[in-house]
Length: 155
Image (cartoon, rainbow, N blue to C red; front, side, top):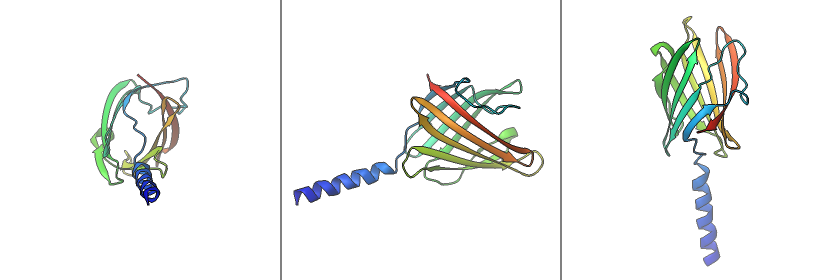
């Protein structure tokens, strides 16, 4: 009976921890040499500050796009529910964040209006690669598609 109790307790602990993912919190700096950036232009942030709790992920991105510095701050719900943040040019960006079954990868899927009146989509995949934060980005709109992979070093 004692063994059954311990087995049951261990099973509950395992099931509880399966729903939790990796914690991506920290200040991260882009490693240009290890990243694969889009040839024509890049959406890669120079620095990211990630704050994660059990329920939310806050991602601050600091970068430079076509000579203009920018800062974005997005807050995502980690329960798969839709959330709204500010997109490019103060548009409304709607996103969902979903953990992989093993809790090692977080996929954030976003939609926002495009400049031509259509819709732009973005998928960011967060995971750890050794001691680096790895973010895969796929973006698409009527103007085309792009993919990048950022490798960021913890500061």
